[in-house]
Length: 636
Image 1: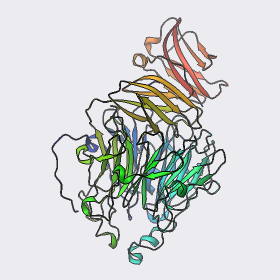
Image 2 (image 1 turned 180 degrees about the vertical axis):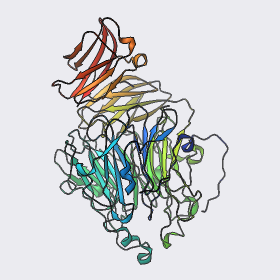
Image 3 (image 1 turned 30 degrees about the vertical axis):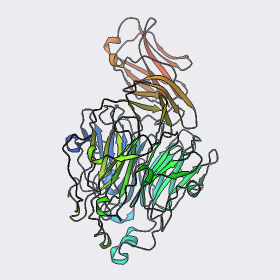
Image 4 (image 1 turned 180 degrees about the horizontal axis):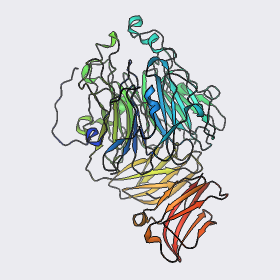
């Protein structure tokens, strides 16, 4: 066993400042208390943002390596509680976990978890299967790795991503694998000094979702088997043709295989390797990927972390990319440069941390843990995390010290989300246990950085819910227009390093008091447009539902469960609605009545589904012609 513990080194010379910093590290106060322990070699450390109980407060899953994983339930008061035991996820105790992603693969309205693994906890040189956990909707998860077939393949798996590559409305899973031979045969210091001349990669998996709880690996047939030493991947539509492409950051790019961009050839069930043609095939030690339109030209750009110098790829909009690392000021130069500048990049996240409308960039840095003799000399270096503030002209400034994010631990995965629902983005960094005395802090914890920016800028959050497309709307793009500017966000699950960010799109609005236009491009290309959106709110948009309904939730707070539903649902009715003349009805979007109760008789309305088609329905409580309460239901 693992060791249990709303609607619509050497430090560079520097000086510590005493001014108020933007971010506060609050992991201890919040109840997040864990260490990522890699076991024998310096691999892994990811996290996934997931609202597993659908209470509107995003939770956090963190892998532990040989230590126990944690499922931190957000209590809604700034604190978290680890509920992994009551969630029935004990299977993670027998394996060395590496990374995690979240997404609703079966479209039942409850986000599931996919955990990548390296090996068994009691046998560090034998690969173990990855884990697919189905969310049961009652606070527990079921391990369906074997029945789904995603647990039948074993490899040294690293990064994974959810995405609907064939636009059938179901989330597929792409999995990167690292070494193609046992770890010790490559990295054993006694035989290779850590510098083995060959580092054979391992084939990737592309699990096509069959829609019945099973998956089929089509990596070979779709030409995305890759076989590099992969560390980061993401489904992302780089050419904006409304199908999801795949980008991969590979380690040992000069010796094994460089980074790769796979262009989706939908409706053909295949991909085309356009890494060289697009200019994104850097032969580096790739570790992480961030996706965002940093220069506001309407095309998604990609930031790739490395053990040396990171790369900013500006999308030219014609299938090619330009390396703007130096001109943008985001090099984050790595471990082979002088000590004061040393930074080994891992996780990366595009986010507007100060809500000034411009997309900033966080880079999670951390030295390689000294595992073999060769590394000991350089791996005592301290690597500080970096926040690059977007100047709005294609350049960035390093504001790490003033934001309080310049932490010297050995960071790996990083995720962003608004855990306290105050309208600004917070950050989580997964740090590795230090090796045999190397490091500032001998017990580095997973860190929660709370955003305390007080500039009073406005913001907007957009939560999408697919009905025809996947429930999480992964692969969708949200575009807003404020004045003469256009900002876009893509919803994805699997970027950064071994991690999965929030699926809620966040926009800083600066001093803007209205969003002129909001446009959602759903996977497959359907576009919905909304205008004159109020600021400082989380807007929920359900695909295909254009009927405007009043939000009376503050009055009644109805409890509807399960929603989405299959066969039956229950609505808890407040006593204030139990009065003479109040009726309850369910209609489809054309207005056709499918259920009616002319008079309420109790505090529960129980509805059996009788030959209803799958889709979106509206329910309403009425007194005469007056609507007292309304809401949406999804039948699966």
